[in-house]
Length: 146
Ligand code: ZN
Figure 1 (cartoon, rainbow, N blue to C red):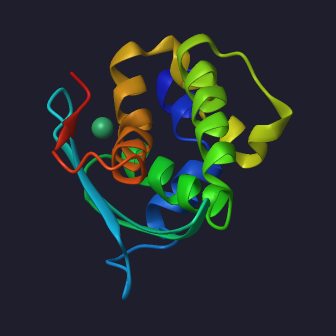
Figure 2: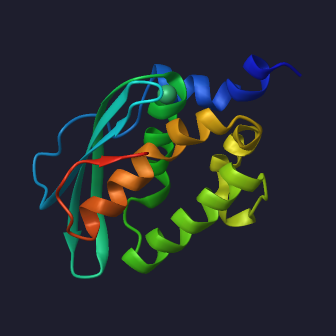
Figure 3: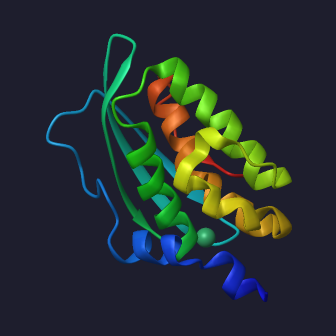
């Protein structure tokens, strides 16, 4: 498999073409911006946190297919989850994209397993996740992948 085949699997292409939960939420109490200077990806993540639950999450982004698809699939996977589960899935996803080690908790996110062979792409895939972490843990300054 060449890099393009491996990285741009159908699931990723689909989420890039038709991102889920795209756009500023009508109601949100957290937000954070993320920037990946290596690729030029920019993202804003909006989140509504009620108690210990991530009730809603949305995003706006400009960047490559990997960064947009990762954000889209992240919002699908994490919406409605407890913050503790969000943190846990972030750790599992981060392990997947840096080491290729799969976890059955990941579901469709396992499509990003091939990323681990391309270090510069890891930053594309993790950008939305870092921004969400910043948003829900109340750091409002811009995050970068550097
Ligand atoms: Zn990118």
